[in-house]
Image (cartoon, one colour):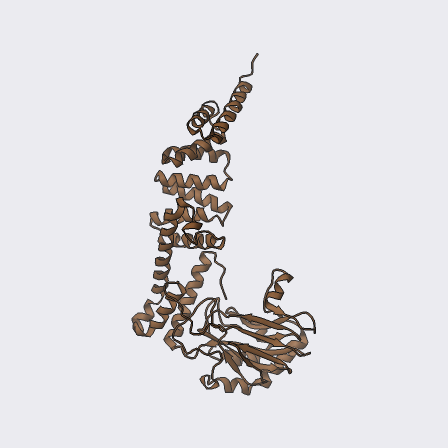
Length: 442
């Protein structure tokens, strides 16, 4: 007696083989008919559902595509491309909540699937969820461009070009509005002119205006504030707190020496994923392996309470200074410890709104810093302040350890209102970037 199940399986296999052959030869109509015959026998056959669903999607028959791709997803729910295509079909069928569900499923499986993010942004925008759409569009564009995509029409797949262009316009307008709104209370209180340079700074950050750096050696990695006097080093008379800090050099040095003796609380100033990265940032002399360590009082705005407690007099002196205080960003204050032979290679800082002050505590011979091409030899107990957005480097060519106290302060050429505005603006940028999963520059 003939087994009908076996017969059906044989028929399906035969039809699939013929359908594949026609599809490979470009005989799409015949392939369609054969795959449909497969479904007549085996309604849940994945390959036929997928082929016919994609054919319907390509022809603009979104409702049919949605039905077929839904059935395919029931068989292969972990296929992110299939889930994305189902989302696209749901968009075409004007079933946006279902599209959102399918795209969310794809992104749960592959959070960096930027094409799914792009379509999810469109769905959210259409549903009226503007801020959520902004986040998805922004992270989609960043992810794509990090992989060399969507940088130009040539690097964008033709079917996506219109949507990518629209998303980029949405991102430009949305981020501009988001960050401009942050400044509204200050603008209402102090007037437009008080925030003119801040608004220009924001436009430069958003790439809506050119930076026009006055010096080619100045290249902030994050935020450039225009129309400030441009100089690698700052005159001491701009900082009325120098005298108090320098007067307490010995007090601070004594607490530093206790820290060095205890050999606790130090950590690398730079964190490396592998030893191979070290030579990109630190050079070594004949003294041995390079090392740049720090005893942090603040790191990216986070207070190290235990370290403050270990150095109470230094802590009190530091806390009395006009520090940059920006949540999750600043200040950064530490004993910076440079091992013998270590060379901190040329690099740039993040923003010229912040300046860096060094109070040298232990300075052997043959130690110096170079900022904007100008060398400065530290002198113990004598502060120096510089703009680290200029290319800068530092070295210790001696046989002993070099230590300075590093302090973040405001650029002295900013007004109080501008400092308040930059604080609020940078915090808002940081909050938004973290929402989008963007790795921040610090």
